[in-house]
Length: 497
Image 1 (spheres, rainbow, N blue to C red):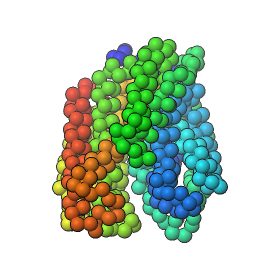
Image 2 (cartoon, rainbow, N blue to C red):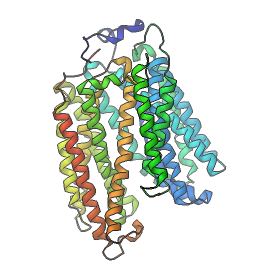
Image 3 (cartoon, helix red, strand yellow):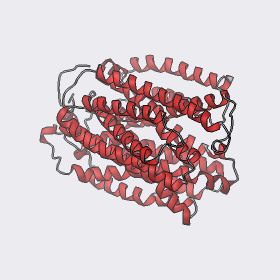
Image 4 (cartoon, rainbow, N blue to C red):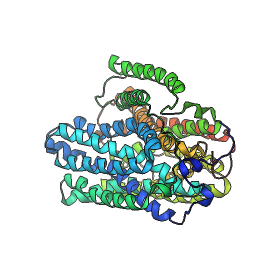
């Protein structure tokens, strides 16, 4: 994929980057950033409302977990098709339509009279979220000059960190005085602001999206296969019904995914306008950075899953205090994302991605030695440093991927990088939880987390599983580090092709 350097902005009458006015970049990014923060906040705030939702509708906690599972399933399944559609009809159109769908879904969730209709409304809300995530990266990159691509992606990552950190805190505060429905009415305000700002500030001329002279057809069959395959995969990996991993249903699900993928690849290679241009993976920068991204989130998500369990179930902290400690990780990620993004623009992204993976390996090994007697004054800085490592590898890794593709494919590739993150998180959390549960069960402790702290010997068994999970995370980070080390050096900034 080492095509000659050309300007994709010349398509469809768009001005090349050198002639475009980027003076409005931060104003435009605010419009994008508001939607980022709100949509990520909506994903993280729902966890604190699950118990109230279960009580309100009289369903079990296992049943109410579908409020989260259906969100992950819908976002993951529709992200790439929406990204490709946006490349064809326009990023702005999909972004604004996504905000409307998201807001409509939030309103329907708040008004849902039954649990079944609530789940249906969550599908609608998540569909709008997937539309926003599918074009968010492309638009953030487009409003900045090519030589500031790292700054753009760093700012996007900071917005995501703010949303992720704010969700549980905002949700917890609101639920102190208002019913859970208020959370979904609340998000309508910033979403409305994001729509108005996007409508007036994110014009197609400012975004400079390249267009083909003839609109290519949408790959309906490829999109359908990917939606079905990803949906089955997310459900099977989440295993919300807690079936045995050797059950025929789960094994059949994995087999179905393999068959669908086997059909997807040749179809995409033959289609004249495929949903995903698989030949992009022939570019070593793109393929190695994409693999590093998947492995990076596979390892990083262990802390996202295990740290709250450690603080609340093993250390006995209340949720407010634990949330304050966990917030340090988001602070570290937000700070390092901004700094690393800007530095990547000047010195190239690869060295910072390498540094980030080294930090993540170091913190993962350090986490493996924690016990329930480790002083919090050691745990809190470790979470902060882990957040710094997360932002340090995530932003330059994303910059390497985005910089390896034509601007005309930014929508679907931006969606692909977000899908890689989501799938890495889903798989990593399932594997980490499976490791801990397996180790504890092998020692005779198949008990709820709430009983681990008070049951003799259970804490020791938990920490055996904890160590195994973090050694696994260190291994994944090490492979991601090697992928980054052996990726081609690339240029500063991005390739304009």
